[in-house]
Every structure is written in structure tokens, then in C-alpha cells.
Length: 365
Image 1 (spheres, rainbow, N blue to C red):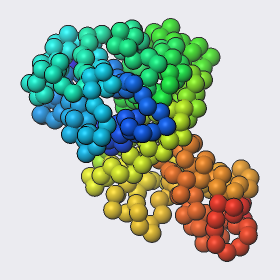
Image 2 (spheres, rainbow, N blue to C red; image 1 turned 60 degrees about the horizontal axis):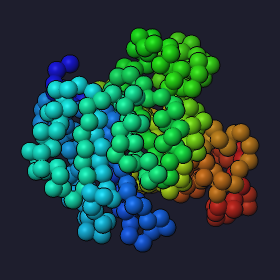
Image 3 (tube, rainbow, N blue to C red; image 1 turned 45 degrees about the horizontal axis):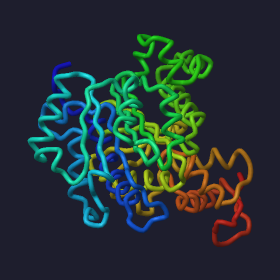
Image 4 (tube, one colour; image 1 turned 120 degrees about the horizontal axis):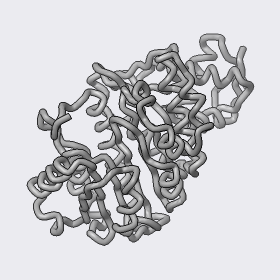
């Protein structure tokens, strides 16, 4: 692949989500009178790329910096080079040089910006921990984005250190062809990524192409949980055209889950993009943004809730918490909507009868 490449539909869809999440993440982490007053907050983009696509669209480092500098709350976030830093890592020298020059051309001399921006030539799996040390990131919140299109080679030891770092989160993506190319990667690297061979061999044994991505995504989600991320979301980002990509988000805080899901729901889906839960095989998500807040019930939501209810009676409040922390996109408030639909279809019993509340209990009819 050359210096620049075309923007894939899946990448464009993913970037929509990143923009929304960054917009919400920065003011939460930099609020002047919050529970925590962090002395430094770091965004790490470990697969930064050249900063621009062949057809002229901005790459993730460019829109991340631009949206921060132009954020509606920028004046209230106390931006300073000592408090806020963006760290970009790119492996290929020509792309590293292109990114650095592009940032200067777009934003002026980096040393004069109201935040600290550093660009490094390095390999994400090998060099991220060292670069985070050199930039003084440890001990304060880090949002680490390992946005790989090819191999995912970030050691679990690094993920564990990020998980144990205060207020930190991680986003890892798998390109659409990663699950077919996995046999080309050294098994020793897989051992480092998943924490041992026995943690990924079961996924490697799956033969059905339509099930491989689910098995590998669950294996990686389990690895992040072992690393210390209490809450992990796994999902497909499905563009209108082209192949989907796969994303795993890890955080130790319920607030992080809520913010990520709210970002999903505020993304403009008018071009037909959607998010899909790996466990939902039959139901096709609606995906059209204009329908999501109407009376139309999404088949994926109904399918997931029904499968959970079949395992035994559950309170609607607990069901909402399960939706929040264990499903790709659904929120706690969606539980009552799904239960109402199941009751109307005579597929579920709700006790007591009448209005559905968090205290209601739902079971299979």
C-alpha cells in the first residue's frame, strides 16, 4: 500500500463514532469541578497513519485535534500543554513524516498549540508503553486507541497496565479481513495478545467463516476483561456498503459504557450504517437514524432480551443493567421497551401486571 489510500466505508462509519465519543470524553475528563481533577489527560492514537486519505478526507489524528480545539466547551476545559496531550504513533517513516507536516500545515507550529501534540515513529505493540512513559502519561487518564486495519499485536501486558492506570480506557479494532489472515501471524504474538495459547486456540479452531469473527471477538473481549477492564463492549460497525469492521471497547467505569453507547445513539445513521451485537445472528438491525427513537422496535433488541429472559426470570432493572454492560449498543432504558413488546406478543409474563417498572419481573410465557 502506498503513502495514502482510499477511505473505506467501514472506516468512515467508525470515524463517526470516534468523533462523537471524543466530543463527550474530553469535557468529562477535563471538567474543572468534577470528582477528579486530573493534572494530565492523554489521547493515544497508536496506528495514526498519514493523517489524510487519498480522496482528501481527514485521518483520525487531524479530526481528533481539530474537534478538541474547536470544542464548544474548550474555554471551560482548562486546555494547556501541561494538562492535555495527544500522542500519535506511526510505524512507516514516510507516513510519520507526512502526518507531522500535515499537522503543522493545518494547525501551525505544534509547540504553540494550547495542547501538547507529539508525533512518534514507532510500532504500536512494541513502542506504545515506552512512548507513554516518555510523555509522562502514566498515573493519569489515558484513552488508548489501537485502530489497526491489519494485525492486532498489542501485548496483553500493555493492556493490563492501561487497565490499572487511573481513569483509562482502550479501543481496539479488527479490520474486516483480519480473521482470514490470522494464520499468517506468528503464534507467539497471539500468545502475547491473548495471554496464552489456550485462550485463543478455541477461536482458531472455528471453521465457519460467518462464526470466526464472533469467536475471535469474544476471545479478545475475554482477554481485556482478564487484563482488568471490568466492562467490555464488542460489536460490528456495519457500513451501508462494503465490509464491516469489529471493535472492542474496554473501561473500568460504568460511566464510560454509558458515554460510548450514547455516542452510538447520537451518530448520524442516515447513510444506512449500523452497529451489530455478535450474539445476534438472526435479527437484522434497523440502522436508520430516523427510526431509532420512534415506536419501531429493533429486532436485535427483542432477540437479545428474549434470549436473556429464556435463561430465567429477571427484574427489569437488572435486565436494563445487563443491556448496558453486556450488549453492543443497548442502554438500560431500552429494557422496558423490549419487555413491553414481548408482553404484547404474548411471549413473556410480567409480574405484577400493569405498568412495567424496574421492580417488575419478566419471564418466558
